[in-house]
Image (cartoon, rainbow, N blue to C red; front, side, top):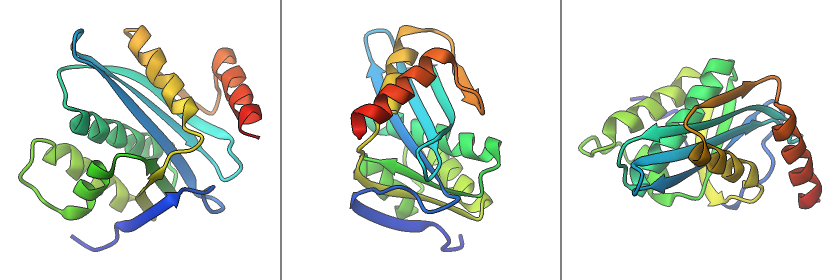
Length: 174
């Protein structure tokens, strides 16, 4: 495989560069009910939300596999939107290391291959590890997924309640 995957590690991830989409991802596992909730939010360099996903996935997954699945979901979101430059911000060092290690013999190998393929399909796709400041929107989307049995995907237009949450979140961060 070509060495076009970018290896980046930060203590704190800053705003993405111009025309680069930043993905915040989060996952929560409910072993008792047998599903995970995932949340993905895509923002531009000014913090404007370009798309979001809130989804429940049925199955018993380890935290590591859950983090891999939400990362893949984020990569699929940017591909479906046609974004050519993107970066995933995450605090799951284990997923970060797995994506860049190229070890194929693991339970999540197919999911990792999907993430790598997504990185290579665009002009610039990368994953960075660091403190996930400003990830409260992704946390909110996870809570939404855990409380509802249906998936939601927002592209271009956000629902009223999500828009108000984003505005409140931005105000709280300032």
